[in-house]
Length: 304
Image (cartoon, rainbow, N blue to C red; front, side, top):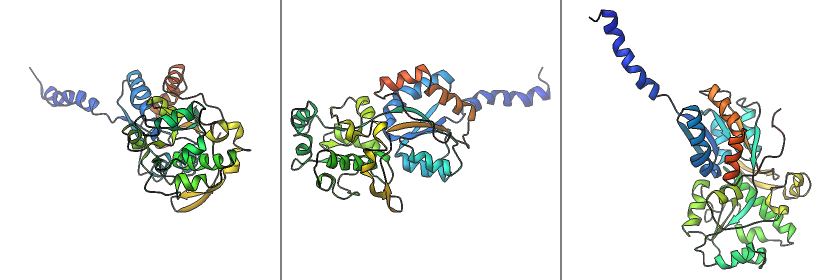
């Protein structure tokens, strides 16, 4: 026979599994180029290991950093590329340190359906010069917005270094046009998809993302690919220039292409956030980075 106490507790007990199932997902914000790695590799692996629902948010890292700093986006962990986005979140008091977890370099992926695909393949094989290929008439080039995405800034630096390295003044103006050129700027999430669909011929790209999507690409020498941290303070610094920021032009220099991970001070689930950082730096996490085309990190912990 049910007592009144049992009668009152029964609905509550029945509701507990539903409440547990409705627990909020573990939200992580990351640089948009990491989409394949997070959606197909790290996200599912970490979710299975910790028995939680993983929610990834991939966009331009500068835009994410500003949303996080303004508390308009609340996530557990943030993974940007380069140190710049960390500085924004750090200054807002929401991240004390950032740990380098992987690295990459700039390259130029191309569409296998492009009418210039054979030329790009020849350049990739070292059988045709890069600069003349970049100046091909009618070339449709794609890149991201330098105001919101580090990659959009990094291609400006890469082409500036190419001007110096190949002694090709004016290459940037001819290939890219103005820094903000609506004809060739796309979101990071859509850039490689447009390339695969043949809507553009050639694009800026991170080798890690291009490898993940199995696209053909033109590799770039260390002098212009921003992948050699040892060159940052000497050769890469020569590309210091005015670039678009959220409120006008700012003077900036290239930063090594390192991916950082940071747990946030207002993380909804601090325990899981700490576990996620541990997973990223574990042997299993490192193996997933390598499988998706990322190189090991080099450089110090930021903010330490």
